[in-house]
Structures are given as C-alpha cells and as structure tokens.
Amino acid sequence: STERFDSIIDQLFITGNMLNWAEPGSQPQKQRLLPWNNNPNIYSLTMQLPAQEYLYKYYINTGWDEGEWIGDPNRRVTINSDTIIHDVFAVPKVKYTRVQFINNAANNPFLDVNIYINGQLRIKNLTFRHTSDFINIPANHPIKIDVTKSNTDTTQILYSEYFTLGSNSSYAAIFAGNTSEAEYQPYKSLQLFMTAVTEVSAQANHIDLLVFHGSTDAPSLSLKTSPSYEKVSEVEFGQFSGYHQFDTDNYVLEVKDATGENTYGFFNGNFEDYLYDGKAAVLLTSGFLDPTTNNNGPEFGLWLSTHSHGQMIELQLSTHTNDIVNIADNILLHPNPAAEYVTISSVTEIQEIRIYDISGKCILNPIAAGNQTAIDTMVLSPGIYFIKIQSSNHWHTKKLIITR
Image (cartoon, rainbow, N blue to C red):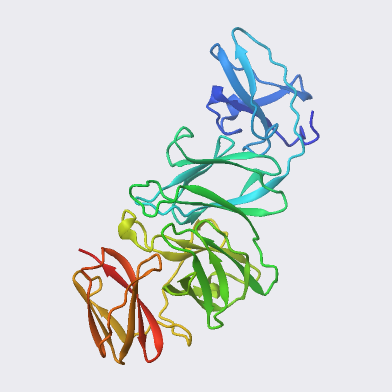
C-alpha cells in the first residue's frame, strides 16, 4: 500500500526481536519476504518461532532508512500456535536530513562511543577527536538518539535525548563532557550538542568556519585572527558561534579568555592546507587547560573538522608575533615545570609581573627586579598558571606549570 515500492527493483524485509533486531537485509534468508503466487502486491515469509510476544517492522531494501514509519510503536503480535498474520505495509512520505557526529568527550582513558537512532545502531566505535560519515536521519519528527560506550548495548546509556531536526539543513552533533564528577574539575556532564551546519561556503572563493567551545575547564573564550586581528567568536562551553567567513589563506588564531586578560595560546590556522575554496568546517576547542585536575586527560588545543570522516586536524601551536599581543622568545621561565621557585629572565627590564589561575583571576603580583626576578611558587597549588610580563612597554604571556 505504497507508491514508494517498485516490485521490479525493490525488496521487502522484516526484522524484530525474533532476529535480535538485525539490520534489515543483513540476514536475507531469514528476513526477506517473497512475492506470493507471483502477485507483486502480496509478499510472504514463513518463520518458525517459539510461543511468545514479538515486536517487529517491515523495511524496503537494506538498512534502516526506509521503514514503515519513524520510531515507536513497533508492530506487536503474540504467538501461541500456528498463526497467519495479515499486515498492510504503508510508508508515509518521509523526508531525511544529514547528520555528522563528532566525539569531543575528553576523558582518560579515551571514550569510544556507539550512536543509536530510535534504538538502532547506526555508528559504531566513534573514537575521541574523530568524526563520523554524514548519515541520513528522518526529519520533521522526534527521533531518539542514544550514546553508549563502545561494545555495549543500549542498556548502558551515557546520554539520551529526543531531537526534531528540519529537512532543509545538515547538522553537526558534538558529544562532549566528563564521565566522573570526582575525577574532573570543573565537572560538565556528558551531552550531545546539535546545530545546523553548512557543508559548503556561501561564497565560492571563501571558506566558512563555525566555532564550538568543547573544553570543560576553560572559561568563556574569545578567538581572534592575525594579522587582521579580527574577532572570530566569544563562546562558553557547549556553545557554537555563528559562521565566520575567511579568504582561503593561512592565519594565526589567538585564544584568550573573554576578559582579554589571559592568553591560552596562538595556533596556526593553515586553512589553505586543509580546505579549498567553497568549503565549510567546524573548529573545536578540545581537551583541558589543566590536565592535572582532570584525571591527566588530553591537553587543550584547537581541532578542525572539515566534514570528512575520520580524525580531526590538530592546529599546531604558533610562535607568531604581532603588534598587539605577542609571546617573546627573549623572555624565559626556568625551571618550568616548577616546584619551589621560578625565575623570569628577560633581555630587557621587567616592568611588572602578574600571575593568573586558569579561571582568569589574578592571584599574585610579584615585585619586578631588573632583568631577572625569582618568584616563590610554594604559595601556588599544583596546576597550570599564566604569567603576564610587561617588558619594553609590551605585555607577554607565558604558561607556568607547578608540580610537586
């Protein structure tokens, strides 16, 4: 009872709990229905089953995309003896959208996940900092998405939520957060963050970049570019920026907190090496500013998803210097990591020193002394700090690690 089915080229399959919900078409000898008495509108299959209740559905061709309807309810029948079941297959006109899943859940050990759509396994063993292929998901109707640890079933769910996705967009679904409140500080629960994305740039000779804040221990972040020093975004954990358009070129991206007081790094945005004109991508912050308070998990960095399947691209740290803020090679911290003290050395006179924790709070303002200043670090707890040093009327930022 559907115009969708062409008896010449299409096949009809059944699956359900009698087959452990095997993917339609994966066991054709047990799943495929054949024309009854050569009638192209009537199909039949004989199954030998124990007496009990069964849940099942019919599907056109292999895979999960062309079922009778979206989600629950399943067909239901109780078998107590030889039974003939008469069902009418009816497929509504279903629209689909494309969704790509990205695993950005920074945990130690790395968390590989499976993705279930309406209870059916669609993506298996998605590794940290990897992206899936785009998959087709029914649009304009609530769908249930479950995320589980790899090699487990849907009874061990890490995250579950219903989404209703439009049919006029593609989507990126980013999995991020922590597994344990005791081991990760600050703790952010595991979530799936969904947003509409474009797979191509709005202009053929540009690239479009969307930024996602996925670092659980980082404050609100601001990203800016050099040499134009144009602001790309300001985002909190779990937020997406709007799209930002670039000429295809190589840039340096500066990551600061939203106050502008603390710089967390300069990264080489070699977009022309990874993207060509007319493409779009998602740029993610990933990992921990302070791994020592987060179960020694992966370090903070910028990672680029070009909407291709596989591992994302890590943007490398840059030693770039510009006219506004720079990290100077003529200023040294030693030892670093430090335990009891750290010495700041500069070829020019040190005018002022400020030490910040990773939240952006200034916790120490040591007195500068000429070209070299020793600082007692026993007052600092183990962790990561940022030292701002004023020299030659310019501010320079260095990262300091305290260990004991």
